[in-house]
Length: 106
Image (cartoon, rainbow, N blue to C red; front, side):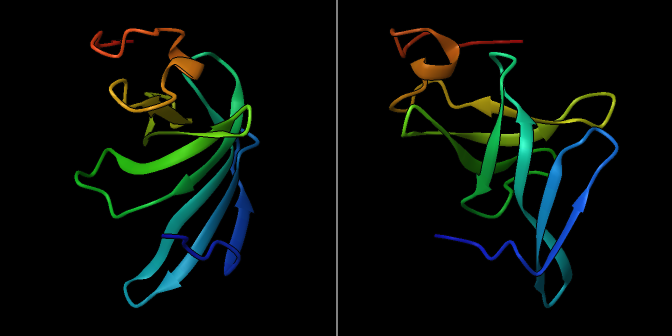
């Protein structure tokens, strides 16, 4: 599913561009340009579903033309970060781990 992300845009203090959709309940974050991935590279995050918890929002980033699934979260400073679902297809593009049985903790 593709979420609207052009209803409102802003830049946070960490130089990340945030895209929001306006829903019945207010603003919903759907896009982050400059999200920090586990390999320390900044990419563009796209939301794919509603969050299952307060701290994680499912989505994907694109690496070498392939979608890598994971979730958006924040670190202690408030920087948006992307964490990979390690058991998903293409997760090795960020984690570097070809054996998808391995769990990655940072």
